[in-house]
Length: 315
Image 1 (cartoon, rainbow, N blue to C red):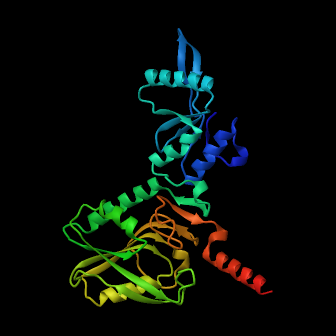
Image 2 (image 1 turned 90 degrees about the vertical axis):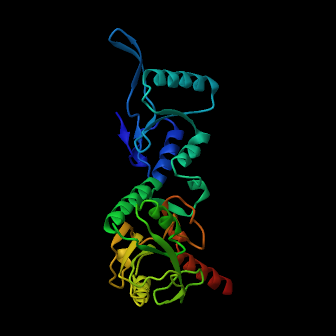
Image 3 (image 1 turned 90 degrees about the horizontal axis):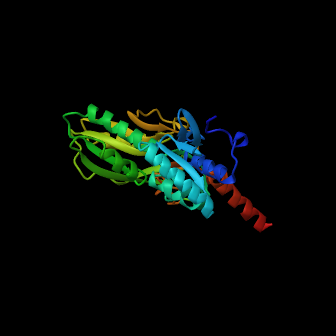
């Protein structure tokens, strides 16, 4: 009987490597099916004499996976069965996978090159690379339709937006003008994190003239709405034809100001997220996915821990 992603306490695995493999798949949010189907390899008349059941099927990749060790006799047997399947079922995509090649396989499909062991601060993956790719493609189609026959100005707010904006503009089938602006905050924490009562300062305005033009303001994340509200009022002073907002992430649970966001990639919970351009202390921007920092790594916890260390030293 095949088993889809199931809790680790109920998994029917016979070998620790299978458990390790599924833990890694779960970390990246990759769907898997255990012992998905059996392939007949040898017949006698209508009677099947030999079957082969791969360990896993990964539906997002349309790939069957058989895990193996480095034991030569086992590898030889499994390689022979792989060749039989490829001969009998040429349309089936199947791979014999060594433990050392697991990370390489995931990287091939956009889930690397970093892996869980090298990013211990990540608690879990919130949105995988394929999920992000699909959503960005969908946003591109909607924006293309909404701005048909126009040449809009795409105005990105640096720095977290660069990954999202680079992918988004390639999904928009329109002539566009691209520009950037940046802001800084008074009232940041010691770790460079904006505070709720921080004052916004425009450190770089748009270089192109936006008067009378349609502007799409592109953000990485909208949370309280205070920065976005300030930016919109600032841009409206240039008298554009209209301004709409596109954000990769929307953290509505933290909203303090009522701002309108026309295009949203994903709504996110009140967690500290990194990856795909978003950082913490300038790290994690290059992750291909969007992940949540572990609770003990999140800014408020780290600050409290640092205060505790300081107090204990004073004693």
